[in-house]
Length: 251
Image (cartoon, rainbow, N blue to C red; front, side, top):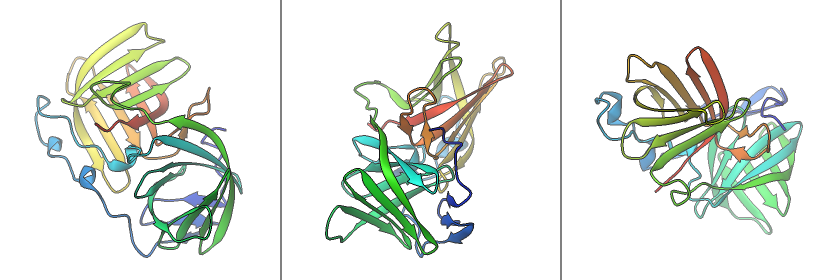
């Protein structure tokens, strides 16, 4: 199901806005604690030849081996990734990091008034203002550096097919556009970085080939396969806009 099918009955917002159910916001009592990759990168002011920036942690799987789609009622599609220390949860409006909580059966995670409980193929998401009943959908293995050596962030989209890769060692973007018929390798600069919301804006560092690449930590689903991703990606180049999904790839 497309990530655009988001019910107005639920909006799972990031951090300050909390989980929205029935049009009312439930703000958690505490926000997720950032890890090392949440620090603001010095590359915001460095030259293009500097090291690649540190991307917001919510663009990554957080050590989880797989991403899981949850189809919920009221209508909402979520993405989760369960690691050893936390569960990462993405909606159409934001992302959360929930900590393990005690439960008699299944697996339960909580952050403030937001909780996620899963048992088998069923899950329940609760806040002070309501509940979502969810069922597991498409699952996808998390991308690794072994599969994509040297890549810090991978994105792709369809119609026409395109691929974008950010190098792990330098501010360098490689693009395959129009079903692979056109390949570009371009330097970039960071023009916007919001670690709390998981938003990044990159622009070309080459005057004769402008582009903009936006990354947002939001639930995203491949519009052909339905596979889940933790980031929505928008690429604007040569007067065209390409939309797709992506994932950060940790070393």
